[in-house]
Length: 343
Image (cartoon, rainbow, N blue to C red; front, side):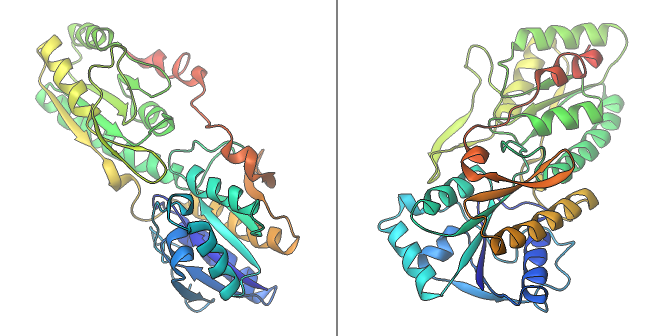
């Protein structure tokens, strides 16, 4: 078979491990010929490709990012985008497509499957917000990066008697903030799932410092919202999937905490550093398992399916289930685990 591979959406540690696994098993076991589409769906629309084989994929397992490149292009928002996708797949004689991405990339894959495209999905997002899989690769790497940063900020916060606000990624789901906050011993965790009251947060910090503890770490997800809605910072710019560009809530939280408490407050916005660099061993293994399972699904004719992790096993689930609903943070993690250590 001739199998196409693409990576879409934000880059993520472990993408290269998936590509490597698809190529190695596809070429060595099934005798497939593989082709990579550059920059996600954009490469399929414009028919921009690169050859993929075992030799080309040597050494990419520990590399972050994606050798194929990526973008947030949506064929359904481009003039004749879908028709161009179908034309490219026909011109390249692609028998099946492996789409590696998050909600948006796999949402397009699901719609194209209805157009007759033979596609298998692989879940990817550092936000860990895809339904039907217990965890996505890249998430554990992002959490480790955020936790390492929080560990370092504890010492400088203690040295200067400061409050430190750490802004992490998480548009609609606060998985990174919750996990990194628990692992890093945060004094407060603010997530998109629950609107926060800045007065309550500030009161908690005042009580904490009154006990002689002069360093507090507040972890805030980029999509967190105050109850009054007056602190949200949004540029108004949107991508082709309609997502507003976020960023800046950490600065607003820090300003309000300092204003209310009088404690010197500083901000660290981790931003894209969470996406970059070497994937953890867990993410390399999970990504490899996903890649092997994806090429197996192609040869089993399991199109319109996504590979997923459930109870330790790699299974197949309909793409519709994967993108139908976002997976948000379990409230029991915030109320019963994390908040045990607040204040």
